[in-house]
Image 1 (cartoon, rainbow, N blue to C red):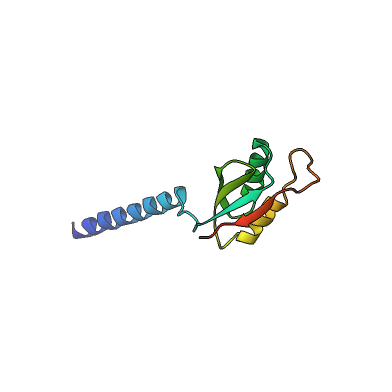
Image 2: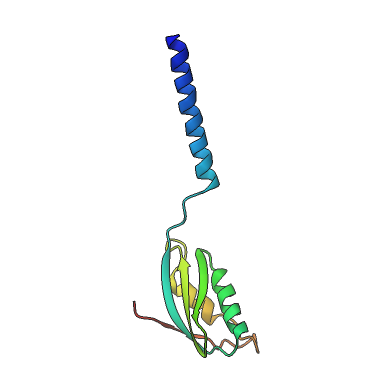
Length: 115
């Protein structure tokens, strides 16, 4: 009987360990995240905002790019993994985005905000 109790206890421990590993695999821990805010000059329309957001979100390590304020000078906030992406790469993605009226021109200029 004692052997049976130990076996059941070991089985329960092993099942709980398996289910814990399954839960971790199904819901992995989020990547570390940092946030950067900056202004972008040269915006002429809402399509510019969309193109810039898409280009920034295509940078490896970027989780989200959102527009905080729309206008000729717009403000963006970007959440990213600092182990994968850098602020310089994010700014380069913005400035490397072609204009919506002429994709061969790169009218956008980034100005970092003070933290």
